[in-house]
Length: 499
Image 1 (cartoon, rainbow, N blue to C red):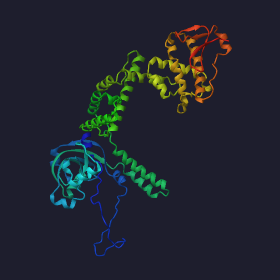
Image 2: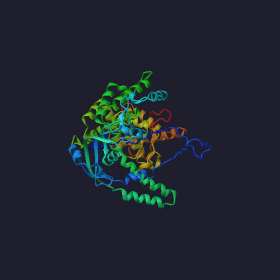
Image 3: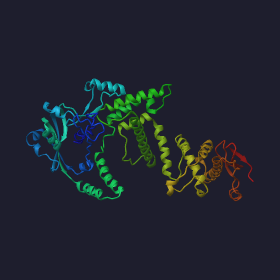
Image 4: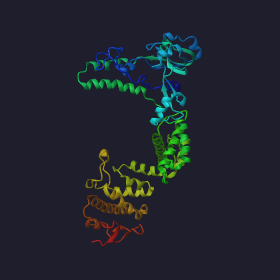
């Protein structure tokens, strides 16, 4: 039923039946009294959108009307735009020959059909060749011609108008009956009256926009740009056979041309599918990227839930067989990277990570945990001191950590691979000192000033937990020995005597 209704939507028809006209009357400079007078008039139907909204629109009661009912009981002459019951009818129409001359400029019942070379005149083919226009084998266009209409779906009131103009119904095939009402008419009438009373241009424009925007919403299709399952399958098979396009990695010298050639081939296959959307090549590539990203995020969510609950209870969200096939094609690394980012987002310390940091987080899960712990240890306890941190409640004004801090932190990562074995107190102490040194170094780099001296703990801290517990960068273990600080020149950890 939904497909039947969608098949009746054809779009807008725009044409120029006479490309050149010359006026000849006393009001023009080159008026020739010897020739017949000719006038050029511009006609505009005002409030076209508002007028459509004032008509009866479907409100429910949808049911099929079979061929027997249409042949014997349908009274076409009683069909009206104001009737309580409306019909959408599939018919075969004939265009009588005697009407061709009168209707040749603007034929009735425009139809969407596939265009082939035989439909064009020799002059049209020459114009297309000069303009470089080429139509694909499956492209459709809305055209108005004087031939028959096979299985043409049309509203009952419109069909009555066609018959009154002289077209003939050869056969009824099927129909859809529904209840209709002018339920938008009071609101639209109110807008039109408010627009007529308006004095300020803004009031005129806003009332017109209210009606026009509402009309646009009634035309929106829920499936026009929706990719069908068949198109998903074609897309996945094509990407498997051409992995360079799937990953967007072309290394050959003619990589750009090769990519365009593959993309055009994929577009032709997808647009020729009997169901689904019709898009340009760049839009199809964006659809593939969006689908791939959605599946990875969905899989990462399922994975996080399973890890957090120990395997159950299961989420209501699940992967379809086609999504599982896509995930197998992408590999586990795709989901792992998304899982790491999502874990950091869930913590919500109020940080924003730049692109360089995101690439680090995508490397390994342990590295992401280490970097997160380091950032928190460096900035959370003294949030007001550093410009890199904003509270979570002020999320709209978050600032990014400087890239220099991220680069310095990455270089020190190997020394913390075994951090999970440390005691909490020792880990917190070592991380906080290292984070403070990194913050000073990063601030100096960002400002382009002199390198700051190594930061040491205050004497009161040294007195509390002597002997000093520091991190050995070679072994990754905490030992009671001399203090470990960051060299502001090399960015390496060095040992210095505790004063």
